[in-house]
Image (tube, rainbow, N blue to C red; front, side, top):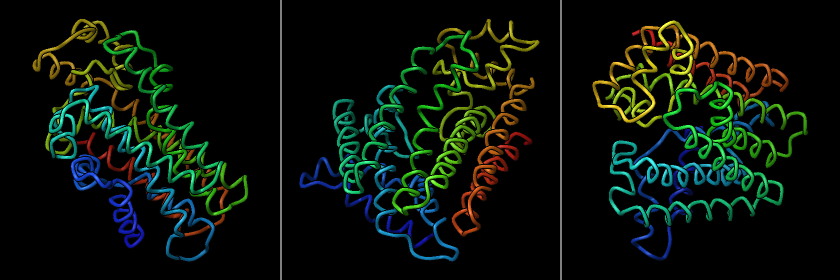
Amino acid sequence: MAADLERIETQLMAAASTADPTLTEITTHLIAAGGKRVRPGFTIAAAATAFSTDAPASQSSVTGGVAVELVHLGSLYHDDVMDEAEVRRTVDSVNARWGNLRAILAGDFLLARASELAASLGVEVAGLLAATIGRLCEGQLLELQHAFDVNRSEELYLRSIDGKTASLLAASCRIGGLVADLPRDQIDALTSFGHSYGMAFQIVDDVLDLVASEEDMGKPVGHDIEEGVYTLPVLFTLDGDHGNELRALLGGAVEPDQRDRAAAMVRDGDGIERAIERASEYASRGRTALAMLPSSPGVVGLSAAADYLLDSVEAAASV
């Protein structure tokens, strides 16, 4: 897998490069800053479920992985403009360094390149990626519509993360299955795993926003609260015994001390524990989907990713 991910890095840089040096500097900025490459890793692992032994990733699975990572990167460029973020992956955000207009155009360029690569893999992959980009927009818009909404329901939260996070992870796995020409039931099982993992992934990320250190997250603890994004641990707390007390702090802009008080209130209640339980439920669904597939290094790798995800949040929450 390490050699395959090196191929991803090389081809990511190539796909984001242009004849214009300035545009290339902007479009490759976050690629050079690094990243976990979860989505292309899932595309490669999903394609690898076609083989019972380790083998180098096919060029089509690498191309698919590059396409999904370009979509992810393009969405980050746009997200940082909306959030007025100044830092991303420990470096200046694109909008902070080059301004909103260039950040939006560069994000659009990355999405266009992703679509071009998807088209090279066939009509079904191209259509899937296009639909996924639409779902990303829908999920993000739903989140924006309920910013600072203390009455945001769990259902609305889940619908939002289904679009803005789970859809791309589901597509990552499905593209891997498609380019490997797997049987349809196995492609559907991989898609189900990717979706379930994506739901768990976002819930875990939202828990970490409240329990991890600022050094680990690269942003203040409780940043989502400050942005008016009330995530599952907060929603569970609002619905609990101390909901009225927390509600009095939220619903609008908060000062850093109010943010810290609200985050502490959530940590002191059962919202964190309940959110981790919900993430575990989604991870379990993902494992059930993987059980439908024959044993392979790809299945082992995907299952290990789900285990690591939950272990990391449980460890952070216990500190």
